[in-house]
Image (cartoon, rainbow, N blue to C red; front, side, top):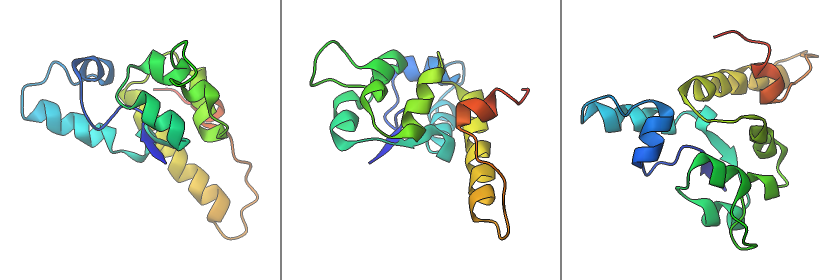
Length: 130
């Protein structure tokens, strides 16, 4: 399943975390949805985990809760998702950077005659400057 890291259903927590809480409506909600729908804010996640974390806070999404039915990204077997565990927060700069990483990775993999190595997002992100 496709998981929206910052969920499509906005909460006050996610407005603060993504950085849209200081805006006035309707720009506040519109900007949040723009960020939430960027490819960098999406990942692949097993259905069972996705349905258990839904719109939860970042820490809950990462680690779940001490309940075997309430799992987080730590329980995923999908590398593109477990790579997110390297981040202590999830905000707009990371969403934008991850969107750029997706584009570069796509081009590296599917460009003709490409022999470029593909990095994980956390590796790639550690080499750039904001």
